Length: 99
Image (tube, rainbow, N blue to C red; front, side, top):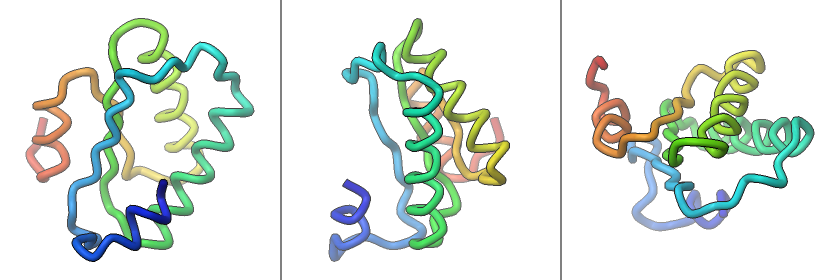
């Protein structure tokens, strides 16, 4: 997925990237899966010089998994990821608005 996004002709590092994960079942996620996902996302952000990447999830279990991803991203030194359960807030953050 990341390779395809980076190879798209319209892609640029200033393009806001929002991953809409509201329809994904994250019930099988454990800390190892989350850590691997963090590593993949951080490599993508470093390789393509992405400054901001937003994740959009629904409330409940997926929000909890997403928060773990956000925290592990911060611990790994990647401050460019933020989790949202409101699409408009995510878009505003991606465009540099203070929230």
